[in-house]
Length: 178
Image (cartoon, rainbow, N blue to C red; front, side, top):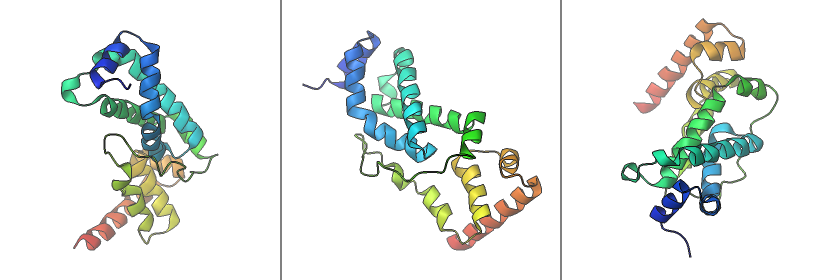
């Protein structure tokens, strides 16, 4: 018999490892999906998921049920860990050596109704009729969270070029909206 969310939280606070296993069994697939859509690498997704769940385990006493469901809180923790990874030097080194992957988990769905594929930013950027280098820049800036300076360094192009390409993309999007 599945635990209620209140019982699960109480048992997690009491450091019940079986409760953590129950949480993992119920929520690892949708959490994996959300993380994968950010980091786009299966091995990294597994690492981020594990780190996120360890963080949840360590900070469960901070969870406030009045602010949202446990799954939502866990999703936010995992997204923050993924964003931290994407901003890390470790990621910048890895991005040069490993290609992005297509999601093996497109069929997973979240238990709370959150559908990350509805965000659609990456898909919108990929559909823009711009050169590949411009699309890569937009991916770095708007999906991976790089600053313009970081993106210029990553792509080894002048900061002025980053600003020009970004302005061009914004103007193109403005024309689409009108």
